[in-house]
Image 1 (cartoon, rainbow, N blue to C red):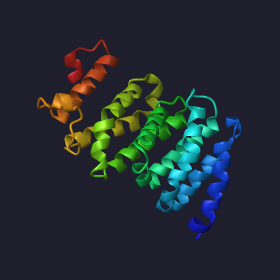
Image 2: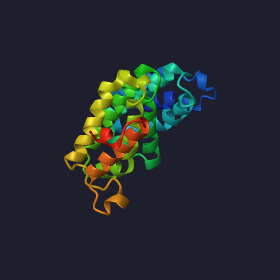
Image 3: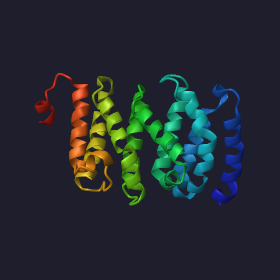
Length: 230
């Protein structure tokens, strides 16, 4: 009843006004929190409306908050809470959006866990962990995802793991890294993460070990190869 009779006119009225607002600062952050609450309440039943919600609020809000880490604090907090709600309850919708828009979503998540605002960084890590677990349940989509994004995510994660300003999130960072290592070790990543290298017989496990070793050597130049490997 609510989904059929109340939600469509609400979305039409609120989202269009938010999207077309000529002055970004005049956009109400409560619109984002309202969308987040709707997704939390209706969960998977609202999945079909996610493309409409994203079209109206995603890119225009992102353009407001991606210039720095400070402007529009309410918008940025509510933006990532909405993204978290969608990843948690309506993940299939993300599998059906264009590849360029999906990359923008992932880039937003990466940008979130690199954020200087602790609450945003924490939410970013939570979203990433949930997304990785969700994608792991998708037998076909997961392999394309891993081949395209696995090493990029790993590289960005290590950039915050080795950054002393992000030590507060170390526990969740370690949890995500452990999960990413585990799916490779369990052979759940069946596509080659580096087709060029692996044409020569290098396994994903060996490739990831070498990739991580290089990241550590870059971050800690004073360590020897032997110290990195141990």
